[in-house]
Image 1 (tube, rainbow, N blue to C red):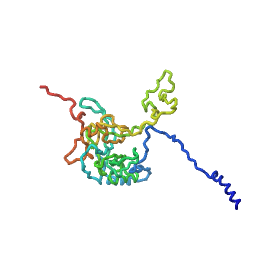
Image 2: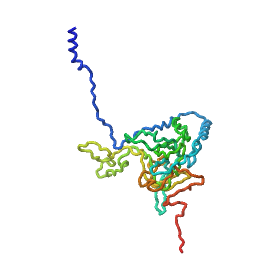
Image 3: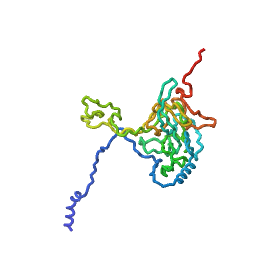
Image 4: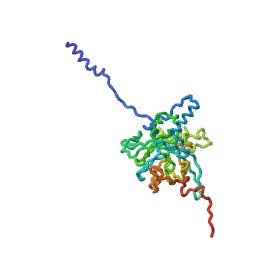
Length: 375
């Protein structure tokens, strides 16, 4: 027994040596650090999968006509300018409060038609961009206490005082979308929309689902901000992407005519500085053009003329309109209150003219030369 105890005592030093130990160490993060990181492509909680795989269903001609008849019976046909009406929400909510400078209104979705020239009354030729408010309807309202955006810039944000309004544009055939996506429009009672957008609004400016939005949501002379996606140019060099002049065409230049040249990262730095203008992907990014002036509105076809080349994106693309945030161009600075929460006719006798022009824009129905009678 004494010998066994001596053997056990002799194994005690080997116990710590044979017992496995855990060693922890850290590796430096060598990932890309962008000066302006790309936005994370995460869908908001109210958005579901939109499109589905189109299978060959082998429907007869009579079955296809029957499906289109059911769609027409459930959803009214869209008008040329005003879009389709909601069968569930035919009456709109009257505004309960007057507009105040700190209130936020909803915006609209417009389709870019193109650029056309116009003339001012002093004879100056200007370029204007045409947009059509394409079948806009309010789809859903999320109050401030329930609206929780997934991406926030502040770690400890204050309680939100603005809600969220979902607006849809460009009605499409329900057969093109998934069942879950079509369920978003049950409350509004309108056809599924091709594009959805959200706008931050004050609780006083909320609208019920199914409310249509027209071009008369804005007034002539008002300034707006336009958000659109630039044209996708693909991978481009520095001359097209950043406007570099390039190298000379001859006199000793060998195969460096369109190259960027020295980027100046030698010496102890020995790296590419963040923000260096180099070749890369060009376009396909959202850009906001601020403080654009509305000079003409067609109330019949819901067309808006904006002064200048006012929007990013190609022709026939959908862009977002909302009230400008430039301090000297807001409705408060111009002392011109907008339609709040949107344009709602007070009586049937109030009918807007078909064409609305700003004071300094020439109306084509007016004579171009004025003659005065000499006394």
